[in-house]
Picture 1 (cartoon, rainbow, N blue to C red):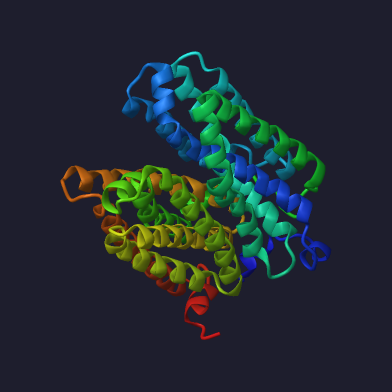
Picture 2: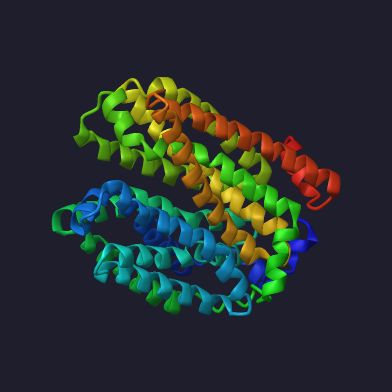
Length: 415
């Protein structure tokens, strides 16, 4: 990679390490598991929350929107304002804030306070993943940065396989507040694990707010964020309406829907692992491969959704291709951001939440227009096409402006 990344790499003895810092990686991934659980469990408990709070289900959905808004606002704000804070201390503080937000969700006396608590819970989301990704890349053996980033993201993927179904089941049977009790407990355990197992991360330089905000002046940072904000919208366009698609289009029984959702989560785990391996061999080739595969899978889902078996298979592949894109984007953002890596890495998760909102909104538009529940997959394929084309343009601009000279090589190289 270019010399602009080297300034934030650890000292030679750490950079040449050949072993994985397994306990620290697990601690970082555990935080991702808790964040992934709280982000998605609210969707499965909306009817319960609506009934308990005496509001309509669409109104209850404001709790989901509040969390997403917290992510979008908190990612750049906290990354910039906390630029001078030592990274281990910042990770712990972010996870404490996350735990407090979920504890506030548990004790929220009314709907407005619930919405406020969900907003607070979302604030540390992007900044945590940004700092945790940098920490993992610093602790990783030489040449394994993307695998380390994928390891952190694996916690988020695993949440969709284990955390979300378990917390949803618990919330439905014991009360929705109990689901967030579990999330708060995960937060407490994560804080303890970070304190105990994560080293001081002296290889990551602290900066200052103005330096971090400098990422927003870099065209490659902004373009890569745009790729994620657009390209990931396709996955969320399908995922948001997957339950009704499976029951009304594929003819699947409601009882089998959780199985398919688990397959989706397993696809995310598999895609995350594959994406990390591919990104270590060439970041841009990995992004192009995952983005192109997403186009094919989402387009196929339009037809595959009409049969329960092919719908289940495609759900797995939608999760896999979407998750495979994440490690490459996260790693690329750290590469092109120079000395503003924390903000750039955090903004990736703000971009993904924009994709979440945009995908769900566009999918809802085509359904409301009477085009049916396969239409969101067609919209998703279109978003993935736009994201792929935007990335090709991004790489060619990088080559022409020499902002990141080996990006073009990583795409064009035959190795």
